[in-house]
Amino acid sequence: MNFVEPEERVALREAVAGLAGKYGHEYYAGKARAGEKTDELWAEAGRLGYLGVNLPEEYGGGGAGIADLAAVLEEFAAAGTPMLLMVVSPAIVGTVLSRFGTAAQKRQWLPGLADGSRKIVFAITEPDAGSNSHRITTTARRDGGDWLLTGRKIYISGVDEADAVLVVGRTEDAKTGRLKPALYLVPTDAPGFEARRIAMDIVAPEDQFALFLDDVRLPAEALVGEQDAAIAQLFAGLNPERIMGASFSLGLARYALGKAVGYANEREVWGTPIGAHQGLAHPLAEVKIELELARLMTQKAASLYDAGDDLGAGEAANMAKYAAAEAAIHAVDQAVQTHGGHGLATEYGLGSLVTAVRLGRIAPISREMVLNFVGQHSLGLPKSY
Image 1 (cartoon, rainbow, N blue to C red):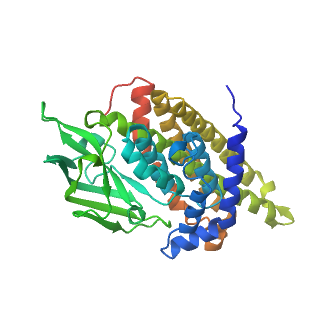
Image 2 (tube, one colour):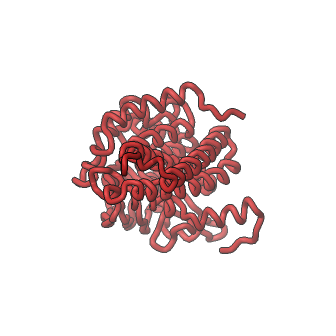
């Protein structure tokens, strides 16, 4: 067992950190507060190959794994420029298309996902079916050779930036009449597709949307993968989602901790840096420990996934997502406390993170559902829901 990352990944981290540092949190926050997108950073990251490191080389990707893409996202977040759409476009959608897409779908979409010139977002959550994906009611039915897709989705990130949405719907089994999950690529300009922006208190360049699909007509080739095997295909994308979510939180935790440590070393009271006082030093040390533990679990989850162990990766990815979210919340809270009143001043770049890291406890899966998973699958306890 090796706890040291490969030299190639270390070099990748350094390169990404250099790019992200060129932009920095001031650029990111300025774009977010102005209602603008971080298009320049995304485009440059795509040109340099950072957005597609996990995608197949034959389609312009780096041919690496989710561990490398997670490292890229972590470094962006650690520089104060978290790239939320990396979680959905190259990670979830790119993984699903790479593993289950047709040759035509791969040729059409993967090169653009790899170089950042195209984006596909992911839609699973519904108003009445959050964590319980078995209650999804968005339904696809055959109409000749086409599909007609009808339903609603909510809290879908970045629809205004996307060329298409990978929608989780359901089809009726002709033999049993039961509904089964299925995945569809839906262009955002398709007739019958409507996206409405949801007002949020999170300061971020990416907006959230509610989707309304009213008999959206799709060609047969819009179906991704096999109609009868979509549940396995769906979860093939959800493990990377959790790993990337953990990396997003880890990067923000590193950013907050770095700001706190820097301030604690510089700020003096009665001739002594405030970091010399255990009342501040110990909480920051606790954050560092929690951060490193969560990072190890995230790396374990990514390693298991890249090795093809979907079952083992599922347990580790849930634990990593949980641990990283908790570490990030603790890190930002303690960073704000270390700065005192400055912690909520815009120029110090911490106040907006209070709500940003809180999201990690909710999405892509709530901490309660992670605990349910661990209780049931890891501990063998009776199912509680």
